[in-house]
Length: 318
Ligand code: UDP
Ligand code: MG
Image (cartoon, rainbow, N blue to C red):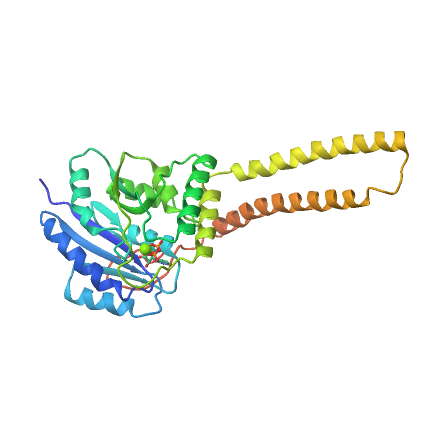
């Protein structure tokens, strides 16, 4: 069998404690993959700590280590995009730096792709052990809502961690939108996907880069990017309340005709006005969000800017 090249793309933001641990683990699995050529592509997403120095040190000792380093923090999605753009492998894996995506699964994934049974092996956590319960709860709600609202199917507990064939990587890259939600994009491009399941692993070192608030924002992004249902919700609410207020007017007119017009009713009026105002603002907010996203896309800015890299023909930005 011909030698397949495997690229492992790892986005890193303030991961100075984990770089070395990860490298050690990757080294271990690459010994099981001796029939393959390996490439470790570390994307430094504008870390403020010594992540870049650690990576450069590794790169100077091991030529399999490639890196691109951003001019500032562009976010994990941009880092993934940069990694996929610059990966040279026939198979490309994306993986977190903190070993929550066990590298030990790689040989199995490679074998599955080799056997030709699928184009892409994805992973999903079956437990969320060690995660704050409120976070697990919200995550589960998000996936449920996402499945209902949009037409892409994202499994509960799905990770970004996966191994893809070249064709799929190119397809993912061809979806070049600025507001990215990778899990949605992976599902959207299709291809034959097999799922591997594993138990949640806690971070090896360092701490999570996602605050609760950041996650909420990310979820809203995900939902908006893959569905226009929320625009429909706002039209529906608009219609519903228009009909309701029309009925209310009829009732009020009849009531005034039959019973006269005592000045009572002022409180209910205020209630109705504020309520309607609220609904209107809510719907306008939803529309505004889409307009804002359209604005960002239309500006067509690069996803990331590379300040430093050891890849000669790096795609500097995109
Ligand atoms: N990450 C990144 N840029 C960011 C935030 C995170 O490249 O702005 C990387 C981070 O270094 C890690 C991965 O994304 O490799 C997942 O982050 P983390 O482990 O903090 O997320 P969690 O597992 O807690 O969801
Ligand atoms: Mg993590």
